[in-house]
Image (tube, rainbow, N blue to C red; front, side, top):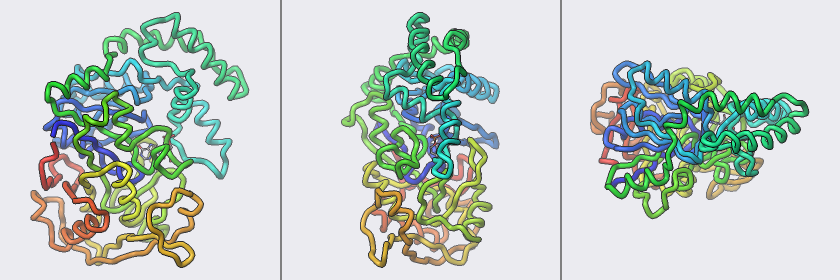
Length: 422
Ligand code: IMP
């Protein structure tokens, strides 16, 4: 199968970078279709660590890497990331950016900060990277796109309008469009050679029979439509976003796989039914090293949440689950799974869309035996202890989606595929 979408099945940080890097060995082209510098994808290969925010994780394998139209691009951060990757020995010569990708500019970051402060207790816990305000400008049709850099007069006109709106919202004349235009045009000599009609490029790759991998950022429950609104990001991490964010029709997508940790984490605010606020949560955080790659914030932790994964299976059409960080659960005498939610004594079917209700539900647990073995050296799925395999089988059964890959450590090689993905 030549096209494959990789999505986060939980609230982001599931290990999509590692899975995408692993699958990139077989792919020809890797496409990021949404999000911006709010994402933090980590790849560890050959003892080296690569931290990616915008560039697709296929870069470590030197594949054609596309930042699609659905991405919001912070130009200076992007160029810095390209330089860092080049300094680490990555071939960045095949990275291309959509003409239609919207830019994150300084005023978007200022707006993100001032709006988060203004929300007080109701804050979303954004990454403060300007992502929400940039997507808002896009929807309001006052955004600035990468392709606008080709036309300095047009760029200046667009910036005049957008900066006036931002200054008004900020209540002060903080930003000057002429200075911002000059700063952007100074970056143009590096950015313009990378710009393409990426929808055409990706469709041509599919026409040739190339293997194309679409890499989602964030996760299903941070999707602006399918997530725990308003505690979400402003884009579409779900599989449908791959079509919109790259200009590829739904008929051209062959397969969708979801990445999920063997437990659950969330960073930022919003309801999280399986969250463990006591020692079990602390244990998962410390063992799993659950601190944000982008912001360093401690992540909220809890057990595997089946209603979350079932919802992800539903809205993404998942054909398989890649379960990461199974090694984090080693050494526990028992492992818990949230199999359902209850509210006022009633067992709920489905995943509540009302965040107030979601904040009140009580998890219903099932316990399965744990395993003490160190999993980090496992080479094949069959090498896993029987209790670990039984845990994965039970999760697959409850979610209704087979486990097709398992991660047992951060290194690229600590990945156990059960079948070919393409
Ligand atoms: P924003 O995307 O910065 O606007 O943040 C909105 C919400 O999404 C906040 O709860 C963030 O913590 C969360 N978020 C954004 N990007 C990521 C990510 O890559 N991993 C995990 N959470 C994220």
